Image (cartoon, rainbow, N blue to C red):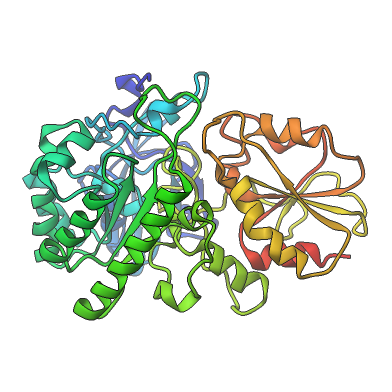
Length: 469
């Protein structure tokens, strides 16, 4: 794996990439391309501090424009947005990850991808902004003071195991044995935290998973929620011990989680822990009823997505729950404000999805998705009793292994699949596999051999696209 050059994450000034017309920034004379050197004399380290500083009513901006340093003054309402879109979330050094987990997906990426995708982070700020999970092994007293003082919440923490020796072994980092002390301290100060357990066969499943959930009840009962997710294994995996779950192992995880849900419900008043949808697909058992997800607190992490999609598709909710923006959200497409970002470029037709040379509205429809998406969409589409709609399952040869989510579909796999499909049909593509109009392999929908319609990844949008006739 190749990490980024140091220069990529060196301290830099916030760069303005867009200014909202009529906004305080526009009225003060801020222009795209300006670098903001200071706000009221203070240099922000990240978008969090930038937002706090720009909440003030009176602002003095020191900017650099074309090599010249200027000072702009502005008056606005307290809390009114400045109206200047900033290029990145962090202006100082990214807190990189010094763990060496066997199951880390970054180590399993194919060569030749964009350089930014190979960066491993362990930065609590990206946990807050994008929902990234941090192990807290690089968390410091200064970080703790800032999180508590500025109420940087919620955070997302990778637990994996509560036994210190097992956790340090999983992380391949001796600090893994002690870093959960920060989790206890953050909970003591009222910081909302969502936990994650990546389960690896023969490493932290079975009795160890039971012990971990018992340890959470004993040590960290104030956690907001916990997701239990399976490891991902690509064809570039070099760790011989890392392998996908068997059906029996997946079923055991589901049963363990359901048993502990009842324990947590009786002792804490809520289920607390949830298994990822992928486990139910691997185990070939039905998903829990929507009420069992208790508001879908871990939806962004693949927990309850199938049920929310079903509710959306069947018209049982008025608005989408929201979709995860992908494993690489913070480096590849989401804005610095956070991870709920549009995945595709603005729609040229002004509608809800991007269209390129749309075929006839009455043409047969093919829905492009990964193997997991096909399992979920199949029954929903079949219930429509329409013979003009088919699911097109896209095998992920780019990553290989057990990669089956729609968010990791690439242009090369889609192109291979679409080359065998007929011309003149409508092909619907979920936008979750795009970041600013690009696939992870750097290609775009325009590179595909058939025109596609990029549709927001929710049941409401898909149903609307299918009903266009």
